[in-house]
Image 1 (cartoon, helix red, strand yellow):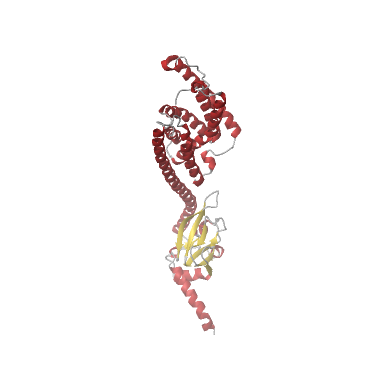
Image 2 (cartoon, one colour):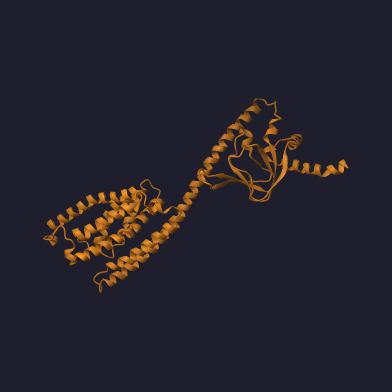
Length: 395
């Protein structure tokens, strides 16, 4: 009865011994060594697909050998719940050998990639059977293993950081491709609109109302970019954080540009024959607008300014997120304002040229604040001041 009853168990042990013999970690072990090791092991233990064998940070109290199936080694990104897969271990390989060397906590989590089976070697039992016959060579190799274990833990951290950086770069490329697609569609739309405007200008004296659908279409493109972006809206300036301070700063920073506009108008009426005799402060009288009409146009301009700034600064923020050079902020300001200036060509070349330098100034305010508030306030003030109060002749 004992022989019959013990036969399945003996066969099972022989099967486990055979599978342990294929483990790289046990390379060079004699049959007796394998049997001694198997005698102090726990298991086998079945782990269903998706179940954790152990979690990152758990005590490193056992070494595992995979008898069948496979496991993925996962490392959590610092400060988040995102896990990155570092390796896939299959039958015959060992799990948790770093803890065997330094008794430290688990440096990563291990999860079954399929229905699997492991056998565990409790480290406490292994330490009950120390090998006291180690020579200089054996001790040197063990010390080297300790050092390699410490390096491996550090390598895991660096690997996760590298994976995160590569993931971030991949996300940037995806978002950049979406942005370029929308930008090209917008430019094609604008070219068609420019052709229509040119044709209408022959029969319609004022084509300024055409600006509304054009800029609205561009604003919608920026909105879609922000809506589908992995970055928060605040990355594109959509935030009210410190809005009072930003608004006040927008007012203060408008003063030197307003003085410059007055100076340019004074130089123009003094030195340019076609402008001589005109007042420095025109108050839109040269256009024949009444005071009520001036207030109406000024209010409409101020109301529409945030849409204009959404287009220009949203584009600027996109460039700043995607560009990688040392001077990416400056490049983003210049590129976005070149595009924004071009959207004014349907009104006049003079207006497009005038918009560019002052747009650089608003771009600097946006980069300084990280908010649309300051640049929008300054844009509204200087636009109304230059066009309706001073009356810069750029149309």
